[in-house]
Length: 197
Image (tube, rainbow, N blue to C red; front, side, top):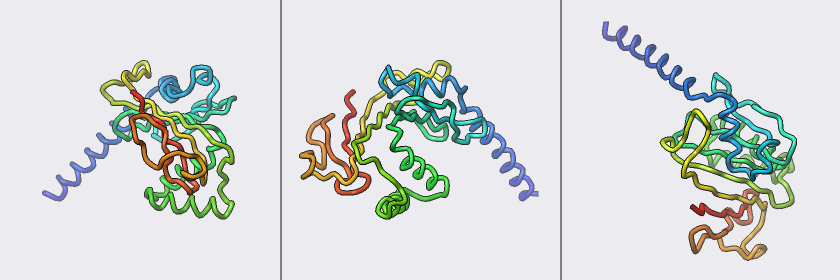
């Protein structure tokens, strides 16, 4: 009897969790509006946008015509975080998402992509490549409009294999908001700027 009650409880809990997850998937227009928040104003209307369908699968919500790809907020994670990046970073970003879907952790993803970049299988842009990030709390997010109050900006400029010597940047920030180089000398080398506010 106890076993069947426990099984019934698990089944009902699973239904409730599934319904809760699907309830978090926002309408396409709201996902798009939120996804492009980090982008410069003049680039928002023409950026490509990834978001989530009713089953929680990441899909293309809008094709783009400019140089930006934007990601809607992941409804399974706490807080709001959206980003837009230069489209030449898409192979690197897409591979990361693919590895995450395969259950790889951060260290595994880093190692696999590093090997693939070194072998030439995965191409990184040769020129500096921009990424815009905007994030904040669930409490400050309006799910009906897609607006995020008191959000913070962070900027990332990917510069593969850059070093502190080649850029003159420090490997850690010495003051709030100052630029610094993270992961110097690697395929993931990038200039971090912010948050400012």
